[in-house]
Length: 263
Length: 261
Image (cartoon, rainbow over all chains, first blue to last red; front, side, top):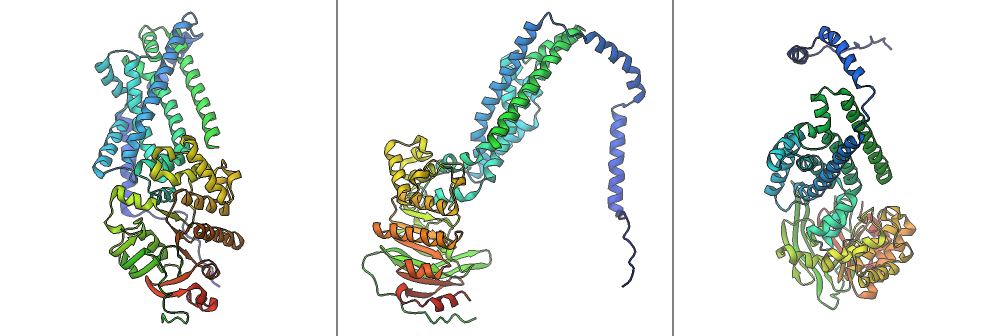
């Protein structure tokens, strides 16, 4: 028996891998330089941040009724936008699903539409809808609906494609048309995953709905923007606190429902 | 290896009645592999025919080709008097609705009740009313309950399919096939995933129900004792071709076992 030396702790990278590592490091450094990252400026700004924080406390409590109304409006936008988005996502997902789509061109069109909905940020959709239907929560609801479709339709289609093909084959063998396969085999099996995705969409829309107000699309974001524009930090703090409570409440409720459905 | 078989015998004397299955020169290739090589087979009405063969002999592919769940490459397939290879769309679905198909893995929708899965058997004739038992009219639900009762599972009608045992699941799959009011049943290794006792029980049930109704059955199996006990005729497939065709009564168990060597 011979004593073999232990292998090196790290393998020497190939010249190509080394060049790629150097390139990646350069990209990171140039990003920090490009955004003007400065610890000195951050340090200098700390007193200003402390002053704003001081003015925020205690949060204003004389306009709770208005904050509450805006908060409810935000939740209404999130709920309605998510519901419409989820409902419209189902047919879109069916068209995008390899096993269920009636034709390849339709599948390609559906997938392109989903990609478009997903890649354009909700704030941009809100800007477009504000121009189209005017300022207010309706524009925000439409923006959240489209944003939900980009997310939900993709995951619905994946959930439908991932299902066991056995029951679908059994129903096809019994003479079921495509609609029968979808309604009797695919949807019942994919439903837990689709409900979980829909609840994530509601959480996402609640968070998204907060910022849509910044571009005039309704909700508590508008309250926050007005307070910040007027340097009324105590009122801004009240809005931020309300947003925090709403987002946490929706997340907790969604998590509880998900556990109940999937667990 | 030689395909000589001691049990090879001339086919049984032509039984009465028309053929429910008539296959000529059936060929199916998967890439470069020819899985079925010119299969010729006829099954007369009311006959229970066992299809035996080693893994990869082409049994499952043959059964799937009959209903065009797998598309044949060549040959003719006549099922219940219809040229299955010429049918498209609704006409093909109508033919499929007349044939019950029992799969090895039962293929039930796991999250739905046994009753909903049985109701699915009527999906071709009832449409949306057979998507779920809750959508079904009373007559359809009653018929599904009768089918479940025939396989001895009426008390478990509302139990979810994923909470049933293997034997119970396969019984539900048989009830789903009965719900089609089938003229013929194709069963692909219907008891392969069951223990010997449950396998014998389920196979006996399938055979008894088919005989009561005069339904033609073509089933694949690895269990020689099932082929001999429940079939009228045994057809052996090797490397995609029929190499054995014998009345079940004339089959010698030991010789049949050698068929898999």
